[in-house]
Length: 258
Image (tube, rainbow, N blue to C red; front, top):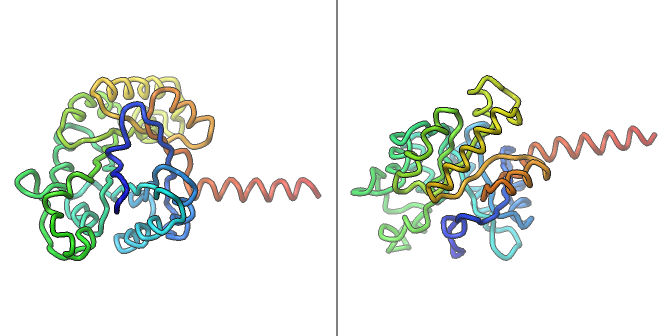
């Protein structure tokens, strides 16, 4: 990949919109990557995307006919060392690790992305990430392209943001409003005033630590609200969400016209 890494452009006061992809369809990824969107999240936690499919998604995004391809972020099915290693080896360089509760959790996930002595990633000499052994400087340059995003998804995690953000190698923090709401007894209602207050506290703490913050906020109105609140990267829609709503709206409009 020759375009600048996400970590270089995902900075304080940036404004980057993303799509959340869960349909497990590389064609949908290719279409989304050509839309001009800034980043795409491939979800493995709440969709049946498996490891072998992720390579196809990466290729699809890179082939999109646009000036600068959208950066691909992968959310693993669970924050776990072996899956992280395998995703790194196929060329994933941007991670969103789910359910990070403490600084110790953050320190572990960062260590999985680095080779010794900085971390515990195992070495394989011929993988897609190093162009099957052709990139001879990979071991000395790979970390420059990495972006580690950790998700805070509970009231406990929000309270631990200062300690989480202090871990070297954590590049950004992403608030999960759905699980945050559930952890506060407001499942399905992330717009509850108490949840929104926690979100405000979260972005303030993220910025106090000097990091960019992200959040999931589907729909133009909600996304704009979070951008205006200071979030640097917002998931403005998902592929399944868009397809469902536009199909439903078109059917409804046609039936109401008859």
